[in-house]
Length: 322
Image (cartoon, rainbow, N blue to C red; front, side, top):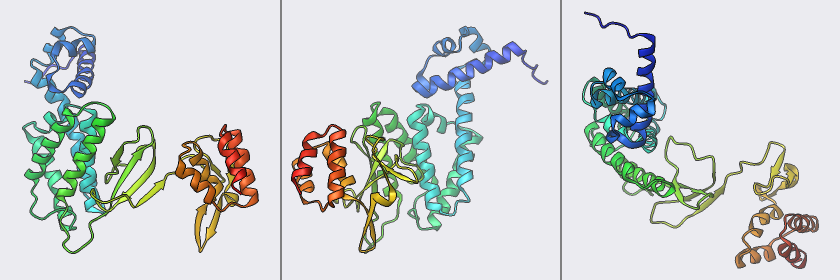
């Protein structure tokens, strides 16, 4: 016998409960009490129990949508031209989901048809990545599931805030490095790590996950035991017409006056680069100022700009260093 359709008000209440449950499970995981979900939904506990007689049924309704989204994501990556990027990008997506929603580990553990669909979608990404030589050939889909469960539990146990996020990034990097095949006799791959200017912490730049908008530097080294080799400053302030000083957007220079070439390589003019050093005023920065090869016009512009920005000591040093 077909189930009787819900009345409009009952349907609205059910949607309220589901929305509240999604938020509550995401914030606290499976352990959140049903009474708390009812309060968040603005309904009585009896309303919750009428629609979902047990917390298991409510969690399954919420988790099904979470897992379905991940399955669709994995299937959407199956035709990616770079199978390694597709596989590791999907692991990164799961890590992001787990960081934002504490119920993801339990959701991935649900028994039933969805678990089989998830394993199949993940297995296809793994198979293609292995064929492309991006993942060790002996790794199996059950291996990945076990690794993910352990990783996601660790992410949930991490402290909130930047320190916990950095720890989660490091753990995923360790897992990803362990899944890649060794290359005897070849140099180890470069590890690119981004440094947040907001808190100074280093966080891995992971495959398939764009850098954070607040990131202004990318540092490069061969592996975790090697010294840093390169530093890139990301310019998020300049326009197509002008170089813009990111610390004070009133300082603008047309690109034809902001750049110079030496042996065919284009550089930012030294008077612009020295603006960044004035804010820290370290001994080595003063040495860089003294050694800089500035044109008379560049020196005059730098001194005037430093004075306008309030760096009077550096403005005087600029005038005296010629």
